[in-house]
Image 1 (tube, protein in one colour):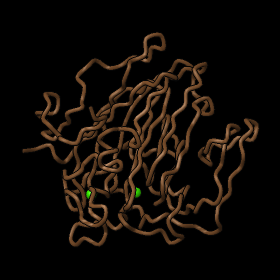
Image 2 (cartoon, rainbow, N blue to C red):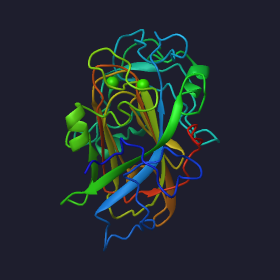
Image 3 (cartoon, helix red, strand yellow):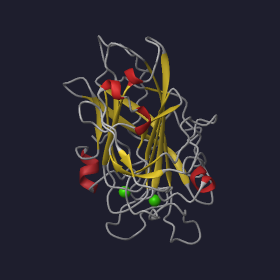
Image 4 (cartoon, rainbow, N blue to C red):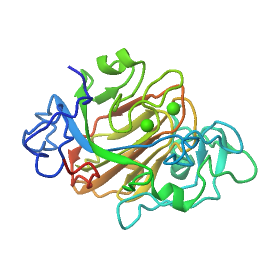
Length: 305
Ligand SMILES: [Ca+2]
Ligand SMILES: [Ca+2]
């Protein structure tokens, strides 16, 4: 069975508010952060927003299939380091094209903001000058994760993270059967705005947001990692901890929660924002040993028949 919904079948939960609910959604009671009896899978429900590329008129969004001035690459520091009061990321600009990755002592890519030489981190480097990474500005970025009938259409979308033998929870478009069959992460294939043509003719150009919470366990070495393309921004406790901005191939970055000054045993938010902006690939992999729980689902524009 696929780990994400492509069919948007009706479900009881969303029948009143959103006919385009998803078949993979679980009605089970919320998971608890028990480490003695961890769930075999965690299903998270977020909002997918479909867009059309910038060359489509009318209705194309200027940031989709926009090549950054400095070329296709990872760009950082274009988003405000603190999540907006409305729980959405805020464009800042003044960012830069990454030259070499910031890494932890284990050689894993980390967010430049979390660099801590006392932990054995390796300092990365940036190219000179500023570059927004193919984002026109605050007004255009604001549409990425907000409904606007002029440029997007939204619907609920669930992802199921499956517990591995090593205790981590994974959703990976490289192994999910439905993704493998489509050649990548295309959860709204032939849905919403439909496929745009081009090669391959998949429904590129969409965003996905997830709002979750978890309980911090200081002794559990809790880690959240993402690998994919294009932009990904992750906030924990409202602070930017993964910054994979830009239009690029699959890139990995992870955050260890012990870096963040959290209070042991307290509950925190993890807010996740993804954007698929460019052919010809769409990759998406979450790896975490955190038992994430759903929080309030943002509203969707497809909430009517
Ligand atoms: Ca699209
Ligand atoms: Ca892409």
